[in-house]
Image (cartoon, rainbow, N blue to C red; front, side, top):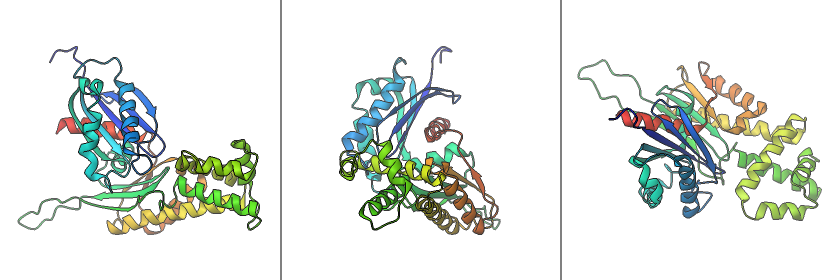
Length: 326
């Protein structure tokens, strides 16, 4: 290989409100990052998801030479649940774009966003990731110990998951908190609930004149995104001491801790030292974070909480480079 020949990998993180793509060299140096719209197939149609992913890739490959991308790793929410049989179709649709096909020398791999979120926080093989962004899920991996008896048994990976079933569930997520906040607003407006600062701040933030304006905002285009954004208002008012907002955030923390403890028990991690990677903007709330820590430590005192210093898309970059070394 000529010394001047450049080799790159691309990582993509596709979620409920945005898609991130990153271009890196084989030393993991990030050269470009681009953001586009949502690509979670639960939230948008197939065409929109492909468009968001392709557009993000196109932005980061601009100006690079032909056949210089040796691996593209795409992490997608829900892809290991109901969309696992759509992987090949997704790859084919992306490669219909001639500009992407032109630069790609290797393969496209599609994996769960949960794995990439875990990789963005730790280099360990065993542990958990608890995600709370637009949606929520907990996923854990444990390889187990090599038996000492003869003959030796093959080391078999084990994993467990809780949550991640979409916006109709996803307790403790941004959508869930936003929905609770939205309900609290209308309880106040109807006179069937207590007053909350969520109402005043939401109307001010979104420049709303009446409840009909709010309904148009929620039930128009981008319902999932709009409801999820209310979670920011709930968080802010919880910091201002609003009792209803604080109660919602406390409940969110409790629900997320239930997800984590469920997976911990399935993998028998109670008395083990292991990392729990906390990914997603909901953990910026001190109320949510402290509740999760408090509840999880009750059954797993040796747990190590990790906050990724990198975006989940960097986890996709790590996987892309690891894949080349196999």
